[in-house]
Every structure is written in C-alpha cells, then in structure tokens.
Length: 383
Image 1 (cartoon, rainbow, N blue to C red):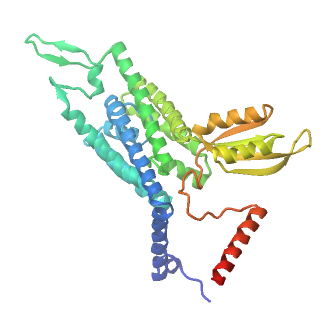
Image 2 (cartoon, one colour; image 1 turned 90 degrees about the horizontal axis):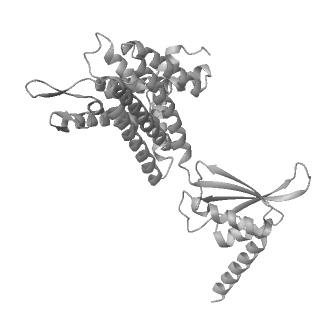
Image 3 (cartoon, one colour; image 1 turned 135 degrees about the vertical axis):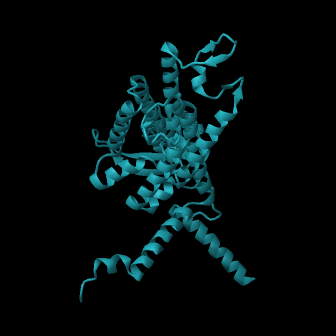
C-alpha cells in the first residue's frame, strides 16, 4: 500500500474534518468540564485579574513610562521608537495582545489559547476605559488621576497663568519609586487572580511556555530572561533613562512576589497528618464533634520501627485552632503536620452533598443496613 503524501495526511477532507472535530471537542471540554458555578467563579477571577492588571498599568506604569517586563512594557518600547511612535501605547497593547494570542493559538494550540481568551478580551478594554477616565477627570486644567501631575511643580507666569512643569530632582525619584511599587503590586495581583481562575495573562507567557515546550527551559528561567531583555531594550528606547530602568526591575520583583502571594496564599484549606498513640480518640472526636471525615493508614516509625496509625483530615481556616486544641488536649505528645492545600475537590468543600453518597461503610454497618432492607422488603411482600 502506497504511503500517503504530506498533503493527503494534513489537508485531505478527512484530515480537515478530524482536525475541526478535535478543536470542537477541546472547546466543548473547556466549557463543560466543570460545574457552572465554578466556571462562572473562575471567569470572574480572570476578569477581576484583568481589571487589577489594567489599573496598575494605566495609573502607574504607563504615565511614568516604566519598563518592568511583559506585554505593556513592549508596547511602551514600540511607542518610543522613532517612526513607530505614530501610534499610541494603547493601540500597541491591542495589537500585541491579539498578536501573542494568535501566536499561542498556532504554537501552543487551542487549549492554551482558550485559557487566555477572557484576559485578552478584557485587558485592552480596561486600559482604554481607564485612559479615557484619566482624560475626563480634570479640575482647573489638571488631570487629577494622572500620577505625573502629583509629582510636578507649579510655575506662575507673569500674566498669572499657572502651568505645570516636568517633575525634577527628589520629586521625580519619588514619583518613579511609588509608581513602580504600586504598579508592580497591582500587576502581580492581577496575574495571580487570573491564574487562580485557571486562566493566563497571555502576552509574553506565550514565549515562556513555548520555550518550556520546545527547548525544555524552565518557565521561571525563561520569564526572567524575557523580562531582562525587555528592560534592557527599554533602557535604550527610553532615552537611556537609568532611573526608569532601575525602578522597572523593582516593579518586576514585586510583581513576581505578588503572583505567588495571591495564587498560593488565598487558599483557606488545610490538610493535617496526625501521628498519635491515642489515634482512636482523636479520630472519633474529629468525626463526631468537628464533623470532618478522616482517612487512616498504617505506618511504621523510621527510627523506632514501631507500628502506628496516621490520621489525615482536611479542614478550613475556621477549624484550624479547634483541631490544634483538641489534639493537644487528647495527646500533648502527638506529632502534627499541617499543610496548606491549594484546592480540595470533594463533598464538604467544593461540591454540594448529594442525596445519596457512595461512601464505603464498615462491615457491621453494611450488614445492619442490609438486614433492615430485607426485613422491610419481606414485610411489604406479606402486605
């Protein structure tokens, strides 16, 4: 049998039909793989993340032309290059956002692009909205929402006209530092919220993920290299403004810190591993009084070689102190390890408890329920 040509394998009617069917299944799975409440909650996180991200850029980084890495900084660089400065920064943000989205669609596939679609739709719109808001909010000829006006000094002309000059000296340094700090914190929070919703901020993340996929470079390493290149390029595009580049590095560091804090720090669920000789009493109290299910498994002490039981229990922040106090009261010498859980999927945490729960029962309980069921069935037949 003759081997099919490249065109027949990839562009035949069957191949095209299979390709579109695969993409449709990907879209369908992306929108139906989780319950509607969770789907709406995740997208709300992404939209809120785009909003916070846009606030950090519009009110702090863009007015001060701070290059801290990412798509917005690339837009600032393009708008600063002679010949390309005919377009405003906002236009470049639109072009780059959708440009990176299309690149991600072809390079990384539809599944990745869907995760960044909501952010890509919302972020440029929020940037335009805040830009218009800054232009509208004017009092006595001063844009009160423009941070550059806060760090400029008034000059009174001979005719009594008051104008504002460019900020100078210590006031200029203060303006750059405050903008970098607040901008970095807000942008990091926005990205963290988007990740918390299972999405992506798109932009230069496409480069980082592509480097990891094709060249096995760690995402953290490629992200750092990408930001360094952008900041270094911004140093020349921004008229070699050393101050702007320096605070840009500060903003980038704060952004990374906030991503971890928001994404990993908002979980209120914990997992405890309890090792105690009084495991029976502790387990009984957790089941009956705190109303939390537990998992028990046998273990052996690595040093003592003594067999023991380990209790695993999941709980939320409100029960944290309660469980600690109970364990200490029953067995002050118990060994307790508490871990923060990013997410717990299961009844009692993220799903509604069904009317019928498929939970394994102890043998004696199963026999009792079976006996009652047979007895009820026999009485119904006699009637």
